[in-house]
Length: 273
Ligand SMILES: [Zn+2]
Ligand SMILES: [Zn+2]
Image (cartoon, rainbow, N blue to C red):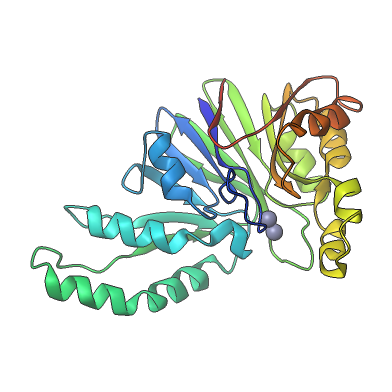
């Protein structure tokens, strides 16, 4: 299994970091977790693309995690020689989100179908709404979901992928909680979206102060990693974007609490496990 952080940014635009998105490459195919800004550009760099995704899994429906979902839907549809519904797994609300996305794309769908005689079908999504337990199992790859805590965004889920005796936890935005502990327990790799509290506090914006109460800080992520006994903690979705050259300060804050390996992810960081 390979874990590739396609996008490690956040809502705050950063020239070097695409929006949050992580690819898990398995023997069963490429599973895409969240699809923030620029996901298809980074996917292309990772050697895959909209036709290569086995399933798109959403942790929650915040815009920074879903903003390029429409790009995946359209590009998969327009590139495919045959009808290929997009499989989507996400929390309750994902079906409505997919339907609204397709409604938004109505004009473009009409233009292309009128122009391309061989494009005789509309884009479709096969949506599976999940809350906890096993959400996918083909005998080679098992994916387990658990509820997380990103209130007032509800519901939100995190995922654990298990294959070939290895496991990765893809947490999404959440504060430490029981569901997170479940899917992180004993994982080889734990990927957590984080904020750096000291930097956010220093920004004179009350709106930014609001984000402190519903994300894991670096310390929270490190404490979860230690409690869960994971081997490697991967920090992603770095808020605010680290000034180039200061990334390892983020890692050192985690290392003060967690004794395992800490990776401060960049776009296209790859971990083989
Ligand atoms: Zn969020
Ligand atoms: Zn986010």
